[in-house]
Image (cartoon, rainbow over all chains, first blue to last red):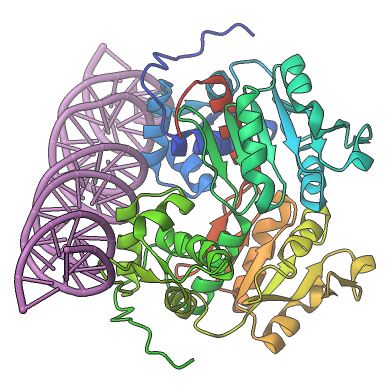
Amino acid sequence: MAEPIPIRQTAHRIPVQTIGRLSLYRRLLLELSAGGMRQIYSHQLASAAVATPAQVRRDLMMIGFTGSPRKGYAVDELIAAVNGVLAQSVETSVALVGVGNLGRAILAYYTNRQPWVRFVAAFDRDPDKANRIIHGCRVYPFEQAEEVLGREGIRAAVIAVPAAEAQRVADRLALAGVRSFLNFAPVRLHLPTGAFVDDMDMSTALDRVAYYARQQRQT
Amino acid sequence: MAEPIPIRQTAHRIPVQTIGRLSLYRRLLLELSAGGMRQIYSHQLASAAVATPAQVRRDLMMIGFTGSPRKGYAVDELIAAVNGVLAQSVETSVALVGVGNLGRAILAYYTNRQPWVRFVAAFDRDPDKANRIIHGCRVYPFEQAEEVLGREGIRAAVIAVPAAEAQRVADRLALAGVRSFLNFAPVRLHLPTGAFVDDMDMSTALDRVAYYARQQRQT
DNA sequence: CTCACATTGTGAATCCATTCACAGATAGGT
DNA sequence: ACCTATCTGTGAATGGATTCACAATGTGAG
């Protein structure tokens, strides 16, 4: 199992888009590997990921993974290489803030899906929700945020609170050491430089989809 | 009420990113307008939207909306102009496919949030779920998709089914005339050119967030 | 062993969104 | 009525991601 995975350097900064596609590649590769595929060409992976072969090769180049002409890429080694970049073999602890409809659906969605990330704490303002366990995740009152985040060493959080509260929540999490946010609230967060935010703005997404339903255009 | 809103042309094609920001601007402006604000400068809107003033001016230029030096933009006229672009004053009918945890949360989330889009039908493979009403939306068995989509003139759909089924569902919807998709399944969909897909890939998003929690870098 | 050819790895070209920077405009002050 | 300060509108510059295109590679066939 200790094969030398062909990696040259993880040197330069990897763009966010590439990180996102690596996550997708890994999901596709895991399925293909389970189906018995040992080698894969850039054009095959590209077609599965709805991308171009050049895009795939460029992405793999970014993480310093190399294949072989005529044989393509070794599937399992590639999975290991992507794991090395995305998860550095450590499980990442994540917190959820906001245990409403959306928050519970998020917990349900992620449970047993990505073993490399774990929701170790959820928070809610409503004390009635506290101290319950939802989808295997303990819910705390939001007042205990600093304590729990510190204790668990949490540096990533998912925000699923109403728009009006999102900024306050983000401020407090940032102060408590969280540097990476997945934000479901339909507002843009002001955060200290160095922090990372990924907005999952469903309102905006629905507006975009409604717009293009009336146009006839484009990807 | 019949003020002439200053619009020059909706001529050229508006990039997706701009459409997304227009949706955000509208949300912010509606709130500011309700709070009594009549005029707004590009730098104020930019700060609310976490963008640059130049970005805001460029976006408004794309939709042909003009303001005035020293007074900025008229808030209510700008809202009307954005409405004209995004919703063309028509309510858009949308379907949901997949009434699981996520699907129900999506319905709950959108209810009473964006009156300009309406979920007029939901579909699920499971017949037990059919013919119920969830958050004001009637659930049909998926077999009736073509009939209902045709009857309601639906051209936009939200896909919230498991990954393994997403492509089949998308194919069938596309054949039934749906041209615009909001895809929550963690796969990329192959669709006829001309169709629009917006991927809300929560798996990928969580991987990105986990990645940057370990780095110390950047938005 | 040699050859042919499909595939990789990557510099260069292209494309597209964002930002810069400034000319032109105008509201408000005097 | 004029002047000034500050904003808009936009052509040009920038920056970054994607795509092109091709030399280098090495595999499998004969």
